[in-house]
Image: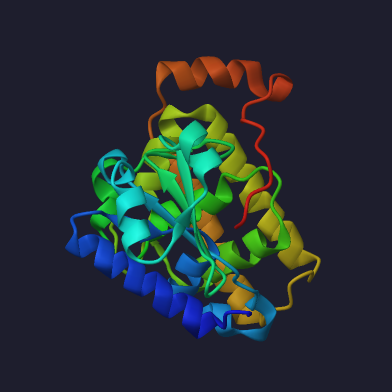
Length: 252
């Protein structure tokens, strides 16, 4: 049977709450996390589908996932979990046709996004800055990624703290140490501006203006952050060498 969005959302909250009661920190990533944080995902121009529950835990939590999900009616993907369980695990609720994809430790796709102590800032999702980074670090954005990023930038200003702001200081600090991440984020911001200019996503003029202004705010804070010597050395090489990891398409 097909799960409705409220059913998927309720199950995600239930799983995270139960895990927290056992001392396992799970937080939503991806589109469903952005849906929970962003009212603009309900706009017709930014509406998208959500099929699965994508979460992240720390390495300590990753060692306890199998027992936890088994106790709550989920079946493990044994092959994947055995081979890649220190980085990625998957679980299925076959009765209700639900799928949970778990990142363990740092979030890694085209770039590595460290989380460390910031995993528990929000009760159900990663912080807004990390939600932005996990989408903006994708070199080959799909349409859902674009809609998610636009919703984040429409709903939240760029600031220097968490809670109702995209923490630009966090983004700038990571980009100042990693030229590749900095470069991909800038390319993503350019893609968003181009899509809006070409009206490939139809928003009101005031909404486009707000997003464009926040893109500018992000660029300014990223450019102002002092860069490491390693960053400066890599900058001299530029895009002649590939600066990102190639990854297989995953649910997002």
